[in-house]
Length: 91
Image (cartoon, rainbow, N blue to C red; front, side, top):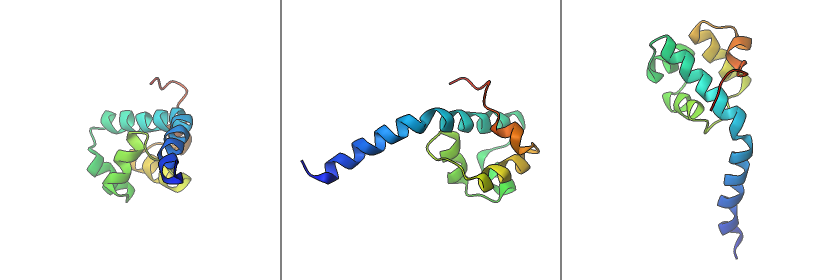
């Protein structure tokens, strides 16, 4: 078996392990965004981010940097600590 065939399997395993926190954070962003009647496009504009980045974060496909999290929190009018508090988020 070639190494190229093994990489997708490794990526899937890595994504499934990190998925819990990443997915919960993404869901929290989506909940807070929809509470404020903001589209992904509007949130992206307010946070000075790419709309594709917002979508990937909300779907749990991408882990946000602390700078990105701070920008999203600011755009949502939240404290950073409030946005990252995902204790009550259920998948």
